[in-house]
Image 1: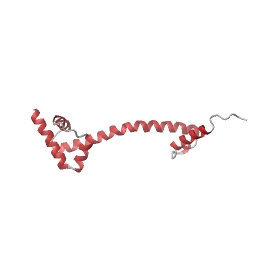
Image 2: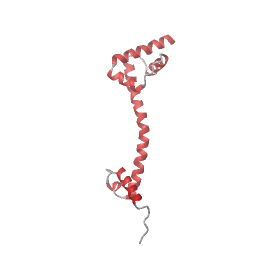
Image 3: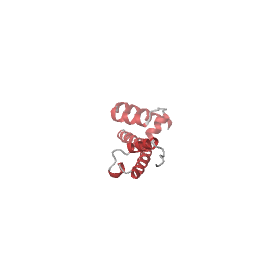
Image 4: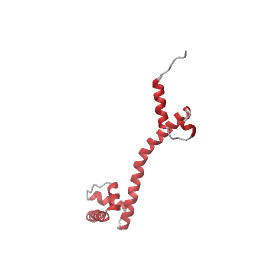
Length: 121
């Protein structure tokens, strides 16, 4: 009789890996060797893209703020510098949402930044 190696633990580990690749096409969801590789690659992508998502959203917010600043005749970099001079601590996510959903409030923030720039000059 052959010797059992790992027994239930091996079966549980395989079930876990198969659950990761559930929904993958072809042998990437059925063939054990391909399943192992697919699971590793999927987790590598997931880890990388969790970091990437933060980067992408910051870029989106900056683009939105820059477009809103352009309509109000101030450059994005001068706007952010003016906010720092005025000690306004609104992050880019909030500024982006203000530019879209509360243009009047964003106008007031722009005015605060412009006044801070004028007083510094």
